[in-house]
Image 1 (tube, rainbow, N blue to C red):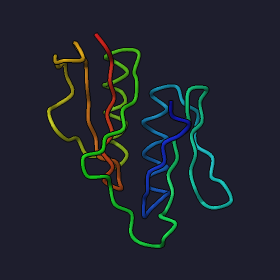
Image 2: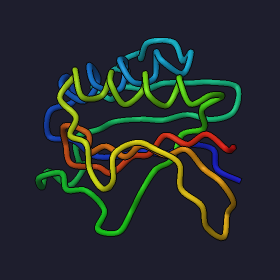
Image 3: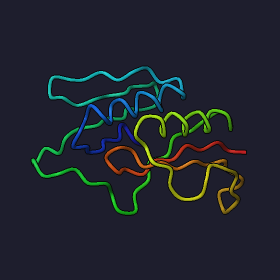
Length: 125
């Protein structure tokens, strides 16, 4: 359904360092910066990008928005979370762990990236 996800950041370099670290735990290659100064991560299942806002206004996270990333194991979720914390992210909501709900049993970890965007790593139990 989606071709790409793009989020804004006032400091693309800080966000690039953060996402290179968390995506490396998922096996995603390091980002590339395009001529417009945007950082891109590309896989066969989708593309993720970071940019400064084109309108010149400050970047701000989506209120109520979350971007989730699939992990193959609990250990991958934990590595993702640790890499995020070590690279400028902040742990939010409950600590990483199992949760059960309408979607079934999920192992989840939530972070705010350096620009304040809410992201989640998820492993289905």
